[in-house]
Length: 319
Image (cartoon, rainbow, N blue to C red; front, side):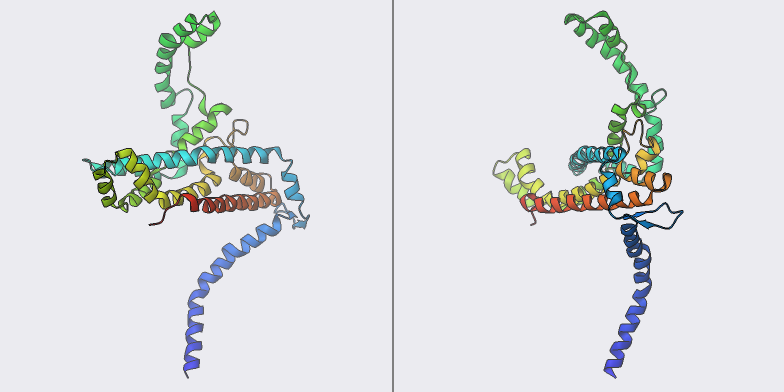
């Protein structure tokens, strides 16, 4: 009797778990397996897949657009992740100070992260407009004064030619989204817009830093900088590590903002990895190379995550 009851309970538990297991199998496991299979096939979604082995992966080695997307993503991640962490930590330290209106300031910092990415991209696209955008409208008088009152006289003192002096007198702001040299800078700058969630995580971590350690260090004559580097940062290292991992993953999956703002241009200067996967799969109907790139992306993220975990032993402190 007890055995029958146990078996009945097990069957009941499996029945309750079945919808979730079926969903995972249908919408996660099966698509992953098929994407791995398609990465070894010539598949356009209009014809049955044809097995071609490692051909898709070998072709990526000579695909110039793939190299461009890979380099753009590496460059973006290398700049945006550390600067976003530094900015978020600085804002969290400022917002952690007991000041009047602290809740209002925290809300202001957090609100941008609640704005949908597509809406944010459209707003920033307007702000970075070369002719009527607010950013260039504010820069024009500043550059005019800087060029006429500072740079032109300095160039004259150094013996510069007339053409150089005239160009300095009439400085103009950059065509942000139309210039390959400035478009990436604009996308990186926009990545700082949504640091609110990271700031909130840092704020939560700051609440766990024992105040007694700061008081003891202050009594021993330690200054604010000394306490920050020897108490606050070590105690915050697990939080920094978590935000680092999330930043790595997020930077390698960037898609929405550059896709809406630039579409990968000008001249593929803002073509990111996920954008090229989308372009290959749905614009060019090359599902095989797209799946191959997706698996390479997974391996890159896994490698960087494992590397971060390996380095964590040297700098992450768990109380």
